[in-house]
Amino acid sequence: MSKKYNINYLPIAQKDLIDIIEYIQEDNPNAALKFLDQIEETISKLEYFPYMGTMPKDNLLQYKGYRILIIQSYLVFYVIKENFLEVEIRRIIHGKRKYVFLL
Image (cartoon, rainbow, N blue to C red):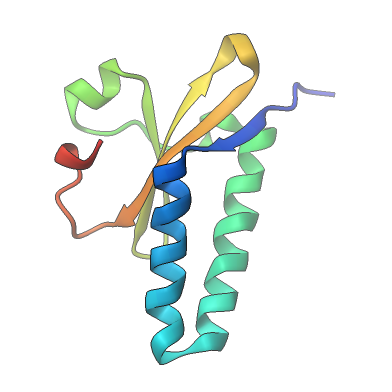
């Protein structure tokens, strides 16, 4: 059996997720719940497959060890902490936002 990584959300990433769900919920509560399920299901796969996200094109983010999961129109930025068997979720933002300044 392969190693299992712990998933840890930074407080700002938790806030990102809450803000996204609340925004979607204003128009369509069912869609918000479905999207939350999709995000949680996709991120949970990182427990066994932490390298499944893509490398960002930005050189600084690559240097800092960031990886990106794409879930619908949103980008989940995370870092793998191999020594601690941890995946740290750092931000969850809409793909059309300029994200380099947010990280």
